[in-house]
Length: 216
Ligand SMILES: C[S@@+](CC[C@H](N)C(=O)[O-])C[C@H]1O[C@@H](n2cnc3c(N)ncnc32)[C@H](O)[C@@H]1O
Image: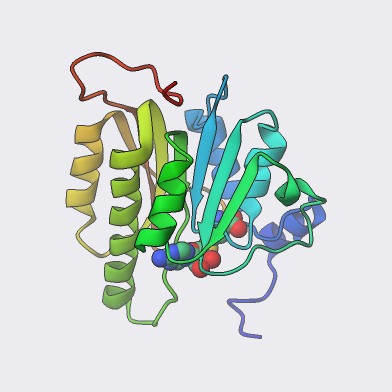
């Protein structure tokens, strides 16, 4: 095991509190700071790059009465900590590449969503510029999901590695949302070049206003 993989205090804390990965504390901090989730009637959340499942578990535990949490990843979820939550009717998981047409169709069918979160990250090659490019492609895909399947008024949080052309991505976020933030949670590994872009309140570009939620 390399020193990078050694469980640190965040990872140990996560396991002690019933989560497979330390990443849960990043989402928790962003949620507490920006109120990413606004559950109400018919409230749906989409989690892109969800495995091993800490973010999904956080949402299901904290907002248990939500209508649906849809999640996608190429890898399976860990079943070590969920205590049946992933078997409930208000959870849907699809295994596959969320850039692919079949996965997109399944997720589109279950939307629109009130909040979209993406912690998706590429397998790292060790070459920063290559990893940043791959991460940017995933972040752009998450932003495209928000454009197509996030309800007006909805929120988005996505991960991106710094080093690529993230300025353009952030500009598009600013254009599409009433508020846009770049945020580095305390639980990010020291030296990691990941950052989260947060879009608050998707602008309603239709002529007649919409309040979000699923159309009747
Ligand atoms: C940092 S992990 C996510 C951790 C997760 N948020 C949690 O709390 O457990 C990043 C995930 O993104 C997934 N991923 C990367 N590219 C993807 C793609 N194109 N489609 C689906 N999943 C992808 C990886 O398989 C990996 O599981």
